[in-house]
Image 1: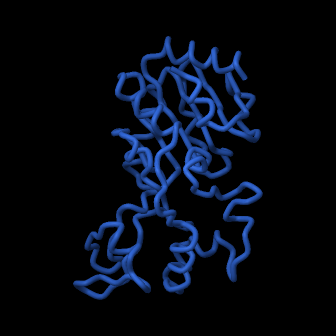
Image 2: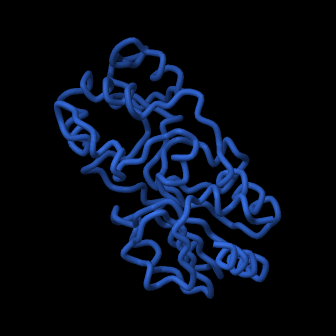
Length: 240
């Protein structure tokens, strides 16, 4: 791994416009479970498959069941940024990292200090009434003993995340494409690149260095100049 980390450092040093594209593997070292690994959420047993619970139609029909899953599995209290989040925030402060494009909904990149974070699948930190649009903070939803309802109109309050059957936010998607297309280096980390349309964004990259850091192989490994099959926090901890 030492030779690969050394090469990664060289690429970062010579690049001026880096973009990071990350998935669930970035946050697993903070204690947040991923979705598709052996121990991930999609391989655990519930009355309904997690993909169904996290769909728009299921939320509309069974909000109580949705929120049981939400509190049990999506909310990880006390989760803190790890070495990967911290390194990316520092790289941005140095003026080398232009954007973090993430599939995660936990807000840990911002907690670490990153500013330009493009959240493709939304965030658990923001919530809104599905009926009148009134906004609520995370504690309003997380501390509710049952399905949270709007204190103005009584509508169901939902987290500002992209559920299955819903489209990605057009503005976030456009900005992500623009940042990736302008980058001279794209680092992809902690993602199996199995979820579309998010995974398809890497095809907009036209820069010099494409790096993939993921514990397991991805369909895009052959496209990358450098592939590092390790935990991303471990790899970033070895960089300066």
